[in-house]
Amino acid sequence: RTGKEQLSRSMAPPAVSSQEPPQSRVDQAGSTGPTDFCDSLYFFINRKEYRLEPGSYQPETTLLTFLRANGYTGTKLGCGEGGCGACTVTMSYYDLAESKVVYKATNACLAPLCAMDGCHILT
Image (cartoon, rainbow, N blue to C red; front, side, top):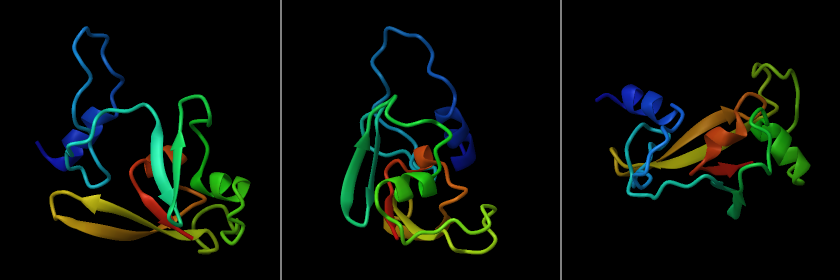
């Protein structure tokens, strides 16, 4: 399977089953990792750990909204369309296929908070 196929399979709603949950999930790069399935969001912002339980955030919450609500006011809302760069942050994650940490510039005004699971955000 390609990384894209794995990612689309991981986004499908879970089937009701008596089997145990899967023992791996798809990371940002589309690689399966040895982590246990978990309903909570787990990420870091400037080396501070966050674990958000289901129901403690709205699915449409953007990374920018979360950052500003938690005191990271250096990241600004400019155009709200990702064109001006005022909301740019660095997102990093470990790519198992490449065996290295990958860094990407991300527009926080467009990035869903739930897409940050397993990432480290630097403001």
